[in-house]
Length: 394
Image 1 (tube, rainbow, N blue to C red):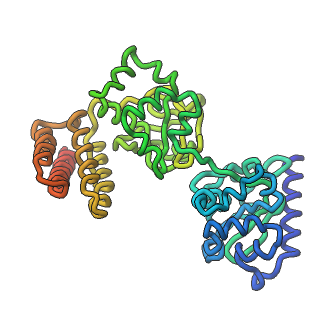
Image 2: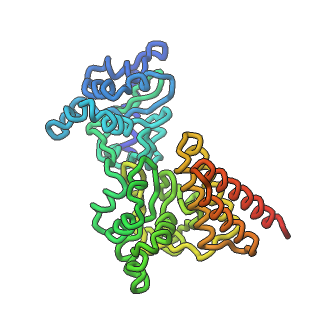
Image 3: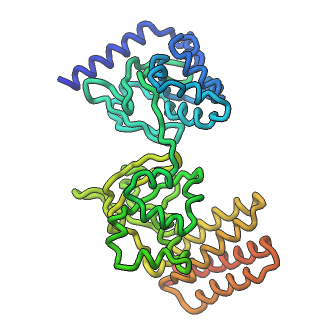
């Protein structure tokens, strides 16, 4: 009965808009439609302040969940005025793009969806199966206003995206204190505060407590910083990877260049031997999944993983070099070669080990960052060719 009542409600709304909507020839862009409607004045003013009117008028098909003026009026006093200040333009754009989904999604199409990815990068939760259609905590009050470049759905609350970075969100959560300390000791706070986005499989304090006595204290010592960096990078994946995407992929390549296995069973989602205990924690620059066990990379990487690490280093290093940041390129290349030297490659031989160590020595003796980058790249290319040939051998 509930499903039937909702379906009837949605169909009624759709019929209402179809009967009262202008013909296709008379339809206007999302921006023009919102301006002429008269009850989206705050939204229109915000779009103008954020420089998004042109994007909402262009030909790309979009779906806009549009807060009415009454929705904006529900925000705490001063919120809108603060967002409209020039210095808050980026924050305002992040809020507005959180209301926009690529493509034309009608109410009937969204009925079977649980979520939708926005232009902001974060997801919206969709729940159209109860008595009241919901987008996050907002109610859908009007559906399927057709426009030339998409569709508008009216909602009764402003949707606010997560606005805290991964380190800030982890600190405020209160259950990742050891992880936060480790990130600080590894000097990775700046990276994880950057634009990303990143996906972090974040061990809780209880997860770190399961390690053998003295392990955490040892890792936090300055002399073990590189080992700590490698362990932490083994918990981070580039991009936003939500739980359903991770399960579908069955594996994810970490910033260490090595893969973790993703599984799903009656007990939930697993990452290697760890279990995800809290999933899809949104942040401004990524998503966090809390896990109950610290992920420790094997002592040696496989030939395939080593090739993946070298390829990843090139993909990161080349843009840095071409942009003139030769030192950054050197850091990426050297860090990868140093990691392979420290962890080892299996199977390997003395010649391969010498190739890695000699590359690092020659690079360290180079007269400048440009020469150093070329020396490291030559070593990486030689190592890739050698490992590839080793893979081809029966």
